[in-house]
Amino acid sequence: MDLSHPITLAIPMQAGDQNPNCYYTDPVKIETIRAEGFVGDIQEGGPCNHRQITFAPHGNGTHTECYGHISEDRVATIANCLTQFHFIAKVITVTPLANSSGDLIIDESQVLPLLKNSSIKALIIRTLPNDASKSTRQYSGSNPPYMSTALAQGLAECGIQHLLVDLPSVDREEDDGALSAHKAFWGYPATIRKDCTITELIYIAPDVPDGLYLLNLQVMNLHSDASPSNPLLFAVI
Figure 1: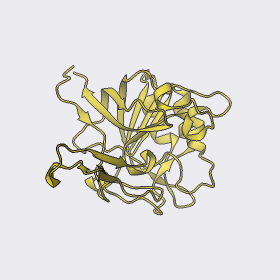
Figure 2 (figure 1 turned 45 degrees about the horizontal axis):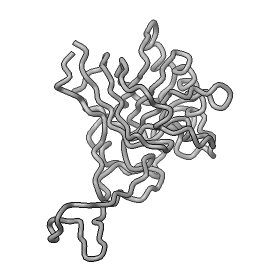
Figure 3 (figure 1 turned 135 degrees about the horizontal axis):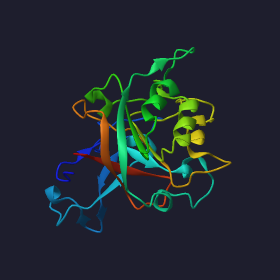
Figure 4 (figure 1 turned 30 degrees about the vertical axis):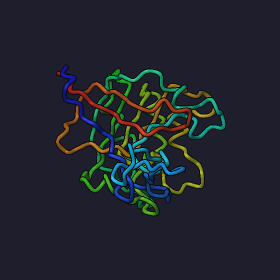
C-alpha cells in the first residue's frame, strides 16, 4: 500500500461564497484579529497572521457527524464517538433515480447488491452527474438528491459504520424534521450505534475508480456533533 499518494475527498474551505453551501448557512468568514494596536495581518504591517474563522460544519463544506446531530445527548460529540480513524472502504458510483414525487433518491436496489458478502466498515457513494461544480454548488432551496430510509436501514444491517456521500444530506432538504435516514443509519433512538458516522459534502474526482481503498477519516478533536473533515483514500495495491 502506497501511503505517499493520498486522495482527498474534502472540498477546500475558504472565505466567501466559493464553497458549497446548504441549509441557508452564512458564507465562511476569515477575519483579521485586531486589538490594542495589534493587527494580525503581515500585509498590513502586523508581526504575524492571526485570524478568526467562522463557519458552520453542516452547511459550509465537507463534514463528519455523529448521532449527536439528532440527539439531545451532550456527550454525543464527534470527539467521543469517533475513536478509530482507519477503515477499509469501498467507493461506488450511482445515478439517483426519480421517485413517485419526482425527487431524486439513492435507493436500496442500487447499493445493497454491491455489498453482498462484503465485510467493509466504510462506504463511499459518488453520485452522477459528477463534475467540479459540486465544489461550489449552492444547494439551499434546490431539493438535492438524498437517500431512501430503506437504504440507510440496509446499510446499518450490513454493518456499515461510516457512510460518506457527496450530497448535502442523506435526508430530504425539507422533511418536516423527520430525518428518517439519519435515524435509520444510527438506530436512533432504540438501538443507537454510537460509534458510527455520516460524512457529507465530499467530492470524489472522476478519475478515482470505484473499488476498495484504505480510508483515513480525519476530523478535529472537537466536542460538537460534527466537525469539518478531510477523508483521505489510499489505493490498496
